[in-house]
Length: 309
Image (cartoon, rainbow, N blue to C red; front, side):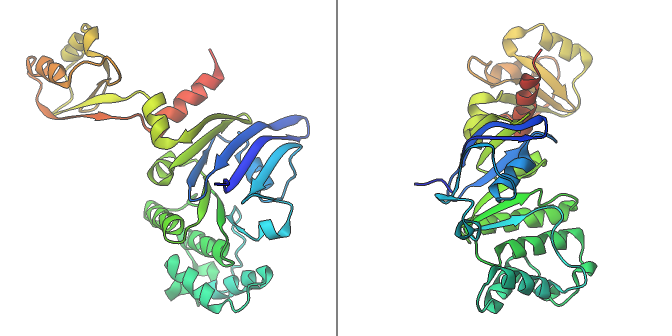
């Protein structure tokens, strides 16, 4: 199957700085794809090239198997950027009608009603956008991105500045968009927890180069450090921690409040041996389990590796 988005060796120089240095990755049809990296890494430049706002110096770029330079290809893409492109003096409904006209969507009324319902703004469609909260504006931006029924959505920090409740609502909407509406989503974000919750595949870019790319769960299992986590009734005493450090076979890593973390990969100690050691020293055990590396841990290790010694 042709990838929804295909980048191969994309390079871009802005002034004296080479911003993208051979960026290569695929976003498969149906993905919610997380595109991560620190400020200045090249995420925004990549998105501008994907949207046809900038031209790559070299490399190949296809969206849905077609050249992004073609107007018909760009019509298959919806996007959310900052600023959001909404007009404060117009109502939510008027904003969507305006953009539907720009896209040349015939008989857009039913489609506008549908996307307003999808983002939970049907009851506020007649209110001026200047009265909307940040979360409501971002939801209307998503509706605007879908008013012409595109196949691919490119979203740049869609929850930036939104309160936690609003972030949860936008994540739910994105999952609905991908699964119920059958859209492919590329999500650029600094919010690692958000990406971990909803994305199935990721790429991490740093200094214009892709440092990590693939299925999120597979990357966590093969590249991250899995852990054995022991939950205790209270923070372990310093004497217990010192005893643990004297037992390298147990693989003690660190204490985090009332949690004790041990190495959990191949050759790790048995959970029962760790529990026996702790209970023998009077530590109350409230739970035990295994945990794969988080996206935050992967992200940090990749960027530290890129920094070098």
